[in-house]
Length: 309
Ligand code: CP
Ligand code: NVA
Image (cartoon, rainbow, N blue to C red; front, side, top):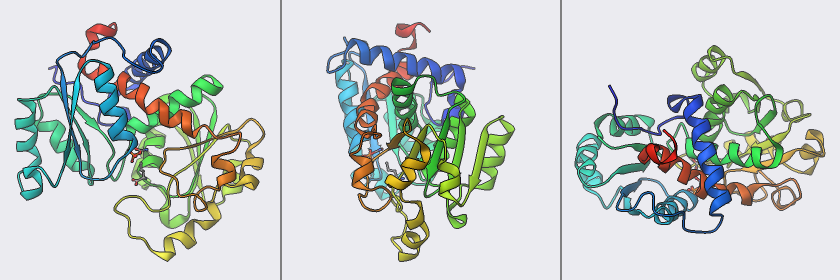
């Protein structure tokens, strides 16, 4: 039975779909680096529900939709009846009668799954407490743009085993790179997720020592110590301080290693200014590629017949 093409998590899209999205994104960037990309989505609309703040995801999706000839509506959870108790399922059923796609940034991943289950149009995961797959499409695109195919390369994650880290785990399983994760024991990614990834043949090592994990890596990646919804606690900062990405750590990775961060960064915490603004940093290209990769995701979900499938 064929239903809408959701972009919920990387492994649910699958390897061929992910590669197809990246190919579309790279072509769109080459053909339209700064602007309009024809009007393949003319007359199409997307509702964007944000239950958490956003700069990159919101702006890149809105601009991507516009550049493809369509239209995006920005909706915050508190302004919708969702904020007054209308169910996710009913919201999905109603929005599906108005728009051609729904993007949602929310808390518990079950809210996203509920939306995808009830919607009759594609649902896109704009971040949950456990995942950020759109970010990973831009990250893989950026790495490959600068360093060639990511398969068999070494990516070192340093810090909290958070939502972005978990999507890196999905990506390791789907794209075939080696992922080394340095996280304090208390903040490591869930054992079930790691077991799932192992079952998929992913090469993932998790340890508490950042120096060991970073040595010889092709890419060092980190994220904020306090994600949206996490309690600000001095104990988190104390646990994570040894995982700061600084010049010493980047030297261990080696002269060719690149640095990535989904942003927003907390300068002086998880990363120093010298690394973020330094010669190894790809963060601005990575942020720009959110725009190009959102176009790939939108085309894959909404107009596969216009991109060869
Ligand atoms: N990286 C990312 O998703 O940023 P925003 O929270 O600004 O959307
Ligand atoms: N881990 C961060 C990512 C922000 C894009 C958060 O969830 O706040």
